[in-house]
Image (cartoon, rainbow, N blue to C red):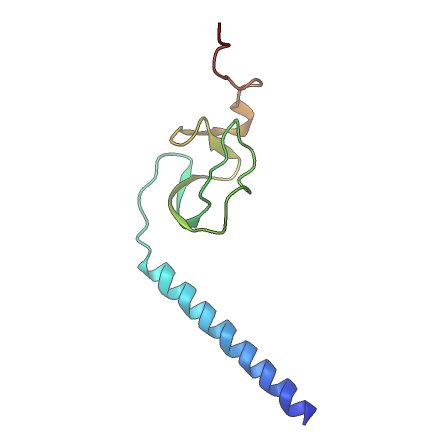
Length: 102
C-alpha cells in the first residue's frame, strides 16, 4: 500500500513538472523579442528593477515578469530607468545626488 502511495506521488509530481514546462514553452512562444540598443538583450521575463550605477542589487523586486531590454552581463544602466548600459567599471566612484538645500 505504501508503495502505491509513493508511486502515485511520483507520478503526480512528474505530471505537474511537465505541465509547468508546457506553460513556460507557450509563454516563450508568445514572446515577441524586440531589437535592443547596444549592450542590451531582450527578456520576456525580467526583473522589475534593473541594476544601475547607484543600485547594484535588483533583489528588491517581487517575482513579477517584466518584458523589455536589459543590460548584458557586466553592464548596468548609467541611471534609472532609461539610462544606457555601460560597463560596471565605468560607473562613477561617487554617485551624483541632489544638491544640498540652502
